[in-house]
Image 1 (spheres, rainbow, N blue to C red):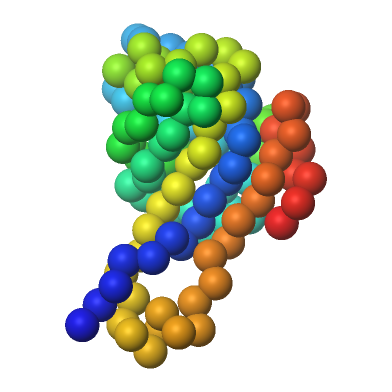
Image 2 (image 1 turned 120 degrees about the vertical axis):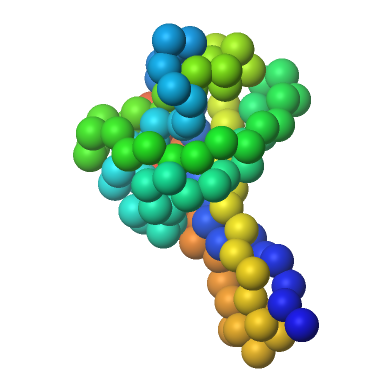
Length: 117
């Protein structure tokens, strides 16, 4: 048997940009994504704390150190600059792996700097 557990979470990420004229996805500054183990094109679940919207998309790396959190394509309609997001990914683990598993989580400030890991 396997169980699906939280793998990675970026909490309270502030939206820095939105572009409807894009293929889709969520741009995340590469240093933030790497810090929690998110890979390019990895499926994510995103919750917008400002309007309650939840949506699935995938990760695209943005410039390292930029603090970029950008809604692209259709997701640009689900939030606005300044909205705070919770970005999550999940992994299927065996029962043995699940016993030892600890998700990677960071909490961001309003400028997307890490304030707690």
